[in-house]
Picture 1 (cartoon, one colour):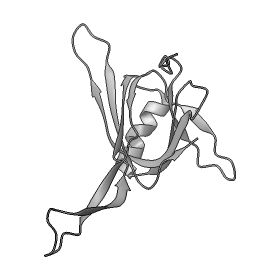
Picture 2 (cartoon, one colour):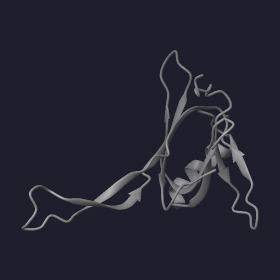
Picture 3 (cartoon, helix red, strand yellow):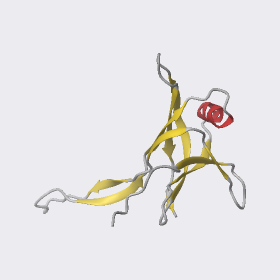
Length: 139
């Protein structure tokens, strides 16, 4: 039996900063989400007695989360991404997948970029890039 699942119902949400419980609101009309994912840094520990290069793992860089949306000028969540980009605001975000096991990734990030992409004969789209800062929590 396959463990594959439909992407239908996956969300990218932004936190309200509430304490002790933060509420997350889905960003409207997300078409695709890429990330988060981690890449270990490396430290070169090669020495004069080494017979080949030697490395140990360093801190994980969770990189970027990118999302493509339908472009919705005037939508509060979309407009807030522009404001956050200009203000360099760090917020908590959550990617949720509709599965029965580990189904979400929560992380702090700032909006690295949010650009509209419009072309004749096509739906306007927004390209959002979030830069993850710190660790990602999977639940």
